[in-house]
Amino acid sequence: MKHITNILILLACTLIASCMADSFDEPKTTAEEAFGNKNLTETNVITIEELKAQYSKIISNSAMQQITDDIQIKGTVVGNDIEGNIYNEVVIDDGTGAFIICIAQGGIFGFLPVGQQILVDLKDLYIGAYGMQGEIGTPYTSKSGSTYVSRMSRFLWNQHYRLIGAADPQNVVPEEFDQERIDDPDYLAANCGKLMILKNVELQAADGKATFAPDDGSVALTANCCNRNFKGISSSKLVLRTSTFSDFAGNPMPTGPVDVTGIFTRFRNTWQILMRQESDIQPAQ
Image 1 (cartoon, rainbow, N blue to C red):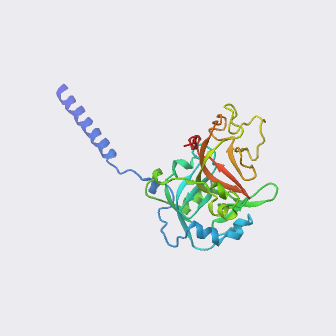
Image 2 (image 1 turned 30 degrees about the vertical axis):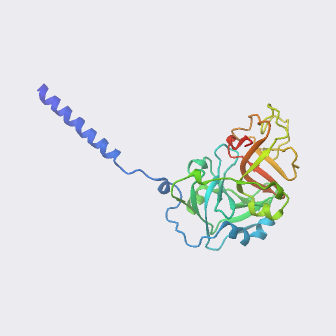
Image 3 (image 1 turned 60 degrees about the horizontal axis):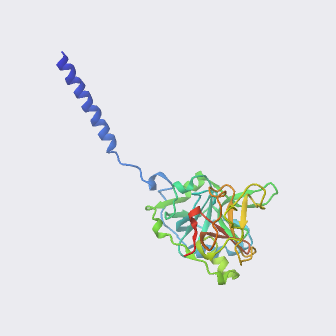
């Protein structure tokens, strides 16, 4: 009897192991299948440069308009919310220009990492600008009655984009910012939103103790962000802008010459650098 019992136990274990092996052999869902709209196909892709040109008056007037044309853009993610300094936004670049897409969702970096190429269906979304910085999203009306492009729901966004292949961060290389063209309006319009690098500069307030974005009343804040100036560069021309909610807000700013990488946005005629993560600032090379 004991011999029969042992045989039955052995058979049961074999069956369980077989079932487990079958489950391990099941194909895993890829990111392309799990996120976005896999049914989107490239039908009428235009460049970001063409998009900016088509809606130049809307953008320059910080206005807003629904996109009714059946058009798409395709680009690579160059900025996201990985350390909280870029909030509810993703930035894509296609080589001709860059654009910000506003999404009401946290943890965007988890499914749209830097280096991920995406196709975006623009029809029925809204294009506009805040401070002349171009953005794509949906309308939002503030308490004061101002209406502008802001964050679309994650459900709407999920229908308007498709992942293309796997992310390759090695393909994302910042373009060097030309300080000699800091006042050039054409340079500003063409390059705002791009991932760029400002080389060999010094932060004016950096003393080994001053932090990027203190929230203790020691510095003036606008929209929970701190603007830091660079030595020898007017704050009306260019600033480093850091959110008090970023992971590195309370960390001391490095002293001495540095190279600063970030998304170079604009507020009217002022360049604003948004670092994606603290490692975007390094000793000058």
